[in-house]
Image (tube, each protein chain N blue to C red):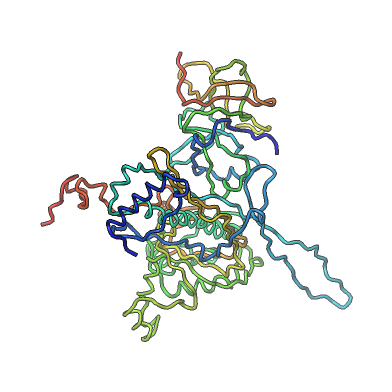
Length: 164
Length: 404
């Protein structure tokens, strides 16, 4: 079993992962457009219920209600349930390789959610260095490189916007 | 057993007391009492279709990539015969049996929390005991919801295959056309008649009539045509039971003298439908009309041709106390799978289409409510500023409506 692509290192019992139905559950079983463990999903309202979606190819995330899927590709419980547990309520620390390490070198750099390439598949939603400029949503901070190439250690913080 | 007020009070107190010791954190037996109930809670419906069997992790398989379990089930292998000449040889068949996986998932109640001080306010009602009883049925309701989705997927998959891999709307207005394929989804006769008369399809549920049961009886043994004249298949199954809402089931009481004959008509007029079968079909009647919506009747072949249901872990109960806050929850691990998607049929008593990607506007009304829309309450006490006497919209919020 390979390293998970997303692995929290904060006590899970205080994080309260919350399950949400997927807007497009076909991503759970797709081979061409799979949902990868640790991808960041954002909430959307469908009718009067809350679901989560991966808005591929839309650039930097602007919805503050977003968080990583805590799970691995192909999990049987998620396939049954067609929903995924999202870590979005509290701050935590984690390793992730659903990210772009480009420009990440200094502790505390701001991280945003955007399109990244994972395992050669483009448009997965992961962490990037927050682009320069005011008014960009950032969701956490870079801590250090991870345990292997392409992985980072980061801390998720309540989303907020950059100022000038 | 009914509890007296003093017993109820002492029951709630005993919960508080027992939380102070580890040995006391156990399920406490007690009877039900004298409070007003909000609604009926029904046991699991799909357990009557796929009988759940206990299973252990040793009977399951794990994945190389993650830590969740599946149970792998075999399906009987295909075989056939052919006519040959004295000198001819039969074709070879390298035998194999297909398999399918039943994934397991967890169903849990809310983490229910209450301070012991506030619990004392429930002198006349064993709050903790009621919640404890109800959450088991609440969890079973979620199992029904999840499995109902499997039913819908199964029948739509059969229709999809018949149309050569295309989702095609099933409408009352075109239902009787030669090109309309009815493999696993059928329309009620009244729904079709309404659509033809109006030249429009909608989601007004029409009453169930006797010919609709005949349609379901014929379905499993019928020859299912496909888009080519030489194609099609016979599934060679038999209808074993139907799942019907209480709402639609009441239509049986409207069956006429012509439908029933004078003896049965007399019985129905006197007692309602009390027979164990209708047209020889066993039925399961449910009041969970937010999951199994009225207007849809499900038909199933015998369980041995349908699928499997397992319980990996029966309901577990957790209770704890942190300072003065009592917390409790329950959860279970279950899994169900339809190995034979041809084993389910559906009768729709409306003319509009609920076929994925080929729906008629407003189709959502015929589908189960979303999970977080379930468990709605009936009473309006909380909505009123006069407890026990609900305010009525339009008569002034918070005021007692003048009835006379």
